[in-house]
Length: 239
Image (cartoon, rainbow, N blue to C red; front, side, top):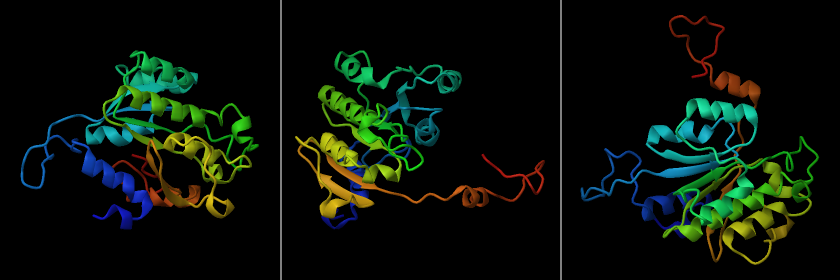
């Protein structure tokens, strides 16, 4: 397909399919003419891991976590219980140096949702004046460290709240500039970042999209299902 005529938020998906040799599942990875693809398992580094949604989503695809980065005691205990063979590297601010030194694997994909309290309308919105907000720029440093070690660029996947698009200090412009490899922060067209967009920087092409997830009541009904054996009509399936 013509990437230039494709909605911006689809470009990373197209790039992955066109450029990478991995199949979603090893038993179905074939090119259009039937030539078997080289089998290579996608490995990802998850930062701000929490109790690890990424692994839950991607393990069915055959992808493997190369490491976590979490410091809070309870999530750390959950990770250690469910993923005892995956190292938890702790403080994410230490990762760039460790990756460059070869102490932490430079994976195929970096993912994470850095703390949202600095950007959320539910918080004080101190943005980059909040140490938690600055972790968004640390995320970019980790991405750069990974690519400095790898022969091919890694895929970068970042998540945050919509409030990051309209902070007082243009944090999103700073984040985009750092991730794309620009020398300075990017300035939003017409003074406000749109809910979806695409930029092609000297280091990376970056696409973003804001999604409207259902509220709690809608989610409750969305996950409601007919009862299986042993469940009453009033119980909601969460599996």
